[in-house]
Image 1 (tube, rainbow, N blue to C red):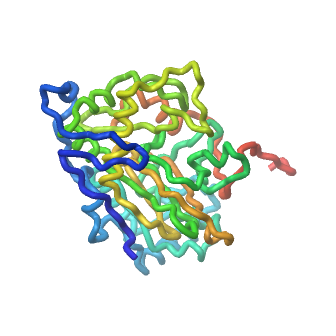
Image 2: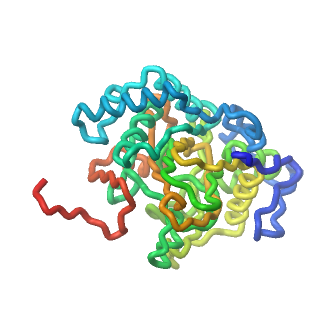
Amino acid sequence: MSTFGAGPVVTAAAVAPIPGRRGLVLAAKASTDIPSIPPGFPAYLGGKVAWSGSDFATGSDHILFLDATDKTEVKAALEHFKSLGCDGDAVEPGCFPLPTLGPKLKAVSAHIHLGRGFSIIRGLDSASYPVEDLTLIYLGIQSYIAEQRGRQDKRGNMLVHIVADSSTKDVAEHHRHSNKSITFHNEEAGDVVSWLTRSTAAAGGKCIIASAYTVYNTLASTRPDVIRTLARSDWPFAFPRFQCRPVIFYKDSKFVMNFGRAALLGNQAHPRSKHLPSLSPRQIEALDAVENIARATQLEIQTQVGDMHFINNLAILHRRSGFVDGPGAAEKRHLVRMRLRSAELGWPIPAELTREWDEAFKKQGAKHWHLEPMPSYFFPLRRQPN
């Protein structure tokens, strides 16, 4: 069975339809019929990050397979760090030495920030480590790719556990806890988003990614008016705070896309307040256009236990397929997510997004490193003073 799947390549003539969205046709139009690309945006985005899923139908350059030497180094680095008696969040290259694997991880970082925008690290025997050690290894490897770690919510959670949870109807509808397929989106903050796969579902649950650069190029050649819509500052995002801003940006020769449908349309887990502005038909068409193109050019990844995924959250869209958990713990999908930034390779952040980035990476406050999923009403209780 193939690990990767690719959607059809989009041409300039049309875009493959999204299931359940009949009637949306993005055929090429004469330039006299529609406005041109907005000022400040390029006619075409080049570079390795402008890819289609079919580009990865053969080959595995985007996967770093850990060999025996790498695994031995990881184990030695873990033991070295533990011998120092430091808190787990202090792990970084200086105290987690990887003499030969480290340069490979630096190359991975370059691919994420300057190249195709994503990489997978595969081959770690995660079952051979207790969860505390596995988390330290995740943080240690990650520190070579992007050393800054961001808070992921107001509570200060640093590790977010993505697991199915049907304890309440509202929780079950949340992207993080639903087992349904979800649409393409970006995280609200973080140059790089990473996932550690602790276990996979009995069926389904593929990680699916698409290039925002390819989405842009397709629109530029077929429907530049949609690019104008996406670049307008009247998109009414509802959370993490209400803000009208664009969906796409072009700054210092970097194209950035940042959005999520829930923040714009609401859902059962995040109902949209009636007093907030609704999206216009043109905006809804633009969202559907992005989804259509992303699905037509997507790359499907059959995740394996122990995988570490890293994506450029500014240039790569992601979603997941629906899944079914099995009865055993090893058959229940469990991903651990983090938000990251590299001081050396991090992209310039558009002004409209800096508040979210500052709250994630600069704001002082509590930081919680829960090794297992916690209930939403969790608060720390201690029987002892320390």
